[in-house]
Length: 260
Image (cartoon, rainbow, N blue to C red; front, side, top):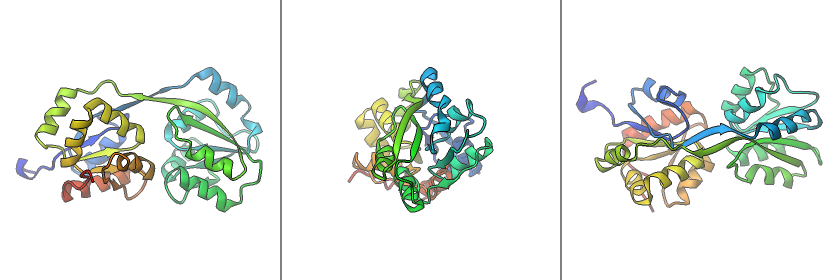
């Protein structure tokens, strides 16, 4: 591919290194990558998580909304104890669970917390069902509140912490923005939206998304952008593969996430 035909790079804002899974997916599609990891994922309070999981067999369900929650739990429990059944927010999370030897009894048909609540509603969740939710430190209340409205007793435990990335080279980022040299910006969580805007400042964040389309992995992440006045493109599926494929189309289409 000649330099003239080389596409502009896609920004990865999720917590991963240069050879991370989303970066690898993008490169496999012929897209250059800029890793601007706006967030980091850190372990939670192990003592509290261990305490809650020691009584996991008293729950009816355990719900997972990310691979990080899966990793935190399966590192402590090699298989679900007792009658505990697992539910996943989407096929990507379900696949990670299955790879760890955990059967998945329920998968949301639509991505996001609201989709998982709808799946439980359709399945006929028993009143008073006890549900364990290993969550991020920044988990939104949508899932726990929705399950509670269905009559479940939900116990939320912090399984991992999502914090600011802290390693961004802001000068370099602003250089790319000033040259309008970014092809698209991917967001895999609302936290990535919040932290990239905080790191760059509202002015440069706006300049970035005025010239490069924003691509969101799911509706919750998209909402964090629309609340700021941007119109993101939603990934064709709530997976890293879907995010990468949609980014390719966004790069080819050009900017369209301009502020309303």
